[in-house]
Length: 379
Image 1 (cartoon, rainbow, N blue to C red):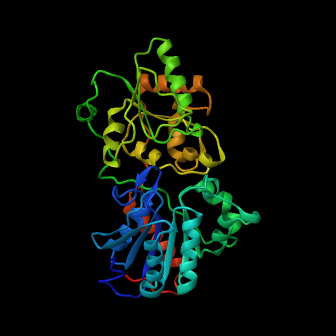
Image 2: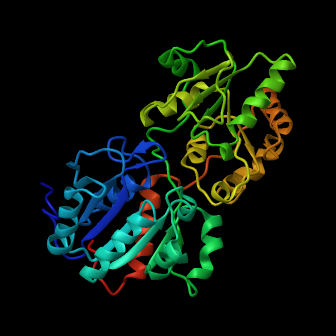
Image 3: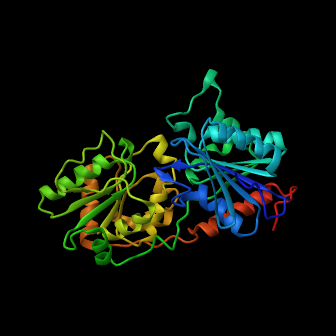
């Protein structure tokens, strides 16, 4: 049974309600993303935080702790979820409720906040109304409703914050970008990484890691590599991620490693000669803030990217520094040109500052404190 809020002062309790599995990662087991790092950093600073994860994929409830952070993971629409809801309302009684995951998790958090008199903070790491499961019954826009009702809205994407700022006239919006675990993602010796991954040290590898839905542009990347190979370049494509029917991976020069753990990702990034962000333009991708881009940049590898707002809005300095390594979206020939440029020049861009989770979580908590200054939050 979860130990709700034990060991710390009851004043200023914070409930962080998140989605356990997102972007094909397990926030709890892999200590992944803002859903884990925000509450974890806040708890480490001495605040009374409970992390409640909603599990859309498995049927097994989990009660655990990560250092000082108490965690409960409950299957969606289960008896365990209902019991946790009652416990949050009757026992934990938070003063701040932060929701991060999708609109339905946001709605659940808003209900808990209403029943307990807590302040509701909506953390928006993607354009939730573009998710496949989002519905507008009778035209009701739950996404807009939650943004308007939140005392503060945190956005991972600068472009999305600007797009939706009209929903919150007068402010109450803060950009809290996706961060990086700097102990994991940093420059590493390419030969040692390849040895650890059983990759030929003599290969020239173009790396892509992430989703493969059509708007990710992986099909364009495959075509670009094929163009270069037809021109005589002895290169291979190293890919990790969840396969998609629209993306053929059958070429013998594609090294496909499938789904890998978050811990394995830095090895694969550093085993590549050039990393590529081939995103196409789309409503969903343009308003996003992919964790992968920050991880690429922190590893200090030669980078090629399309001129996607996912990069240009969130990392404008690095986008400018890319120069000829920046190319047009949905243009395989121009993508091939940019890859060829980096194969010959290996140009690096500056590593972005203030991307560590502890820095971003601290700034996010300061924004929450400003927006809820009439409520005690703790140390």
